[in-house]
Image 1 (cartoon, rainbow, N blue to C red):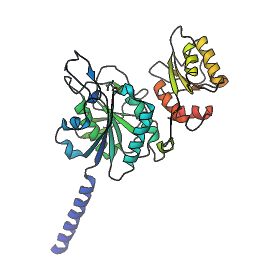
Image 2 (spheres, rainbow, N blue to C red; image 1 turned 45 degrees about the horizontal axis):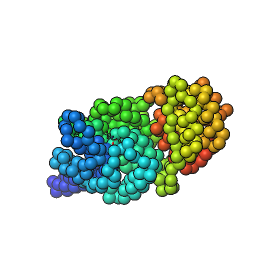
Image 3 (tube, helix red, strand yellow; image 1 turned 180 degrees about the vertical axis):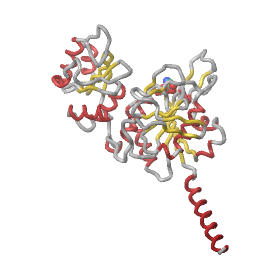
Image 4 (cartoon, rainbow, N blue to C red; image 1 turned 135 degrees about the vertical axis):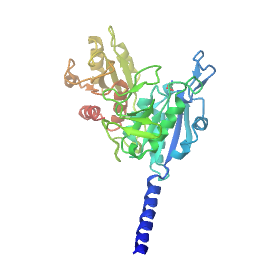
Length: 356
Ligand code: ASP
């Protein structure tokens, strides 16, 4: 009897050990560095002189993290670009998305963290969200203060991003961004303050989670579009992206900017109109002409919150315009760029605006 009991206890302990070691197996987090203020350096720690984005290499940034990061994940790192994200380009998105796509396809990689400038972080996040095929965590991270400034936020943000990436709860949530203890979804994120460390916010919803030390808390799951193994625009099928321009509305705007965008080869124009995507009669005339020439016109808004709706002051159906709904101009541009790789059909493009 005692012998049997011993066997049961021994077997249970072995099983527990087995599961324990599976549950806590350290994931491999692959870090792709692109530059930004997180990798910025300057001569003054108090912003008396300018600093240069993207000048510090990823290995230096990783060396600045506390030693215990090694308990959380096995880290591998690669320097992809060394740019301020104001210089991010559609071709770079293609390169980055292909790289991420092939990394997440590998059994050796459990999650990807991308260090990125904050200026266009939300655009890269959305692009990857719509093109990369995986359920594994993909986390973008940046910083508002350069690595040489007083109270630099980069090391903490990078640490947190790795913690979030290594956490199994972060899978199947689409591309995420981690900054200032906060986790946001690529499906609803915008930079909202030019200088504050708490700059990223949801446009129409709130943050989806928080990170505290080594703990990750998902507080809600409001992201509009979950990752699936079939992204709407698989990166493997995209060769090039069309030229899509954004134009900004204001009192007294004329249609000249629209005419020149068309003359310069824009295949679509996102007009950041006033209010609920409105524009002056002069702008409207030029947009109608552009639309007749086959240029896709998207009505969005310079107002940061709320939707640019169909069926308001502008007759979208009559002129073949598309309303951006919950997407601000920079998001609408990405959706149209990707949408145009599939179709020029206005109804289908309108549907994409509502879906993504
Ligand atoms: N200009 C920088 C960039 O986007 C700003 C930052 O990273 O916060 O690269």
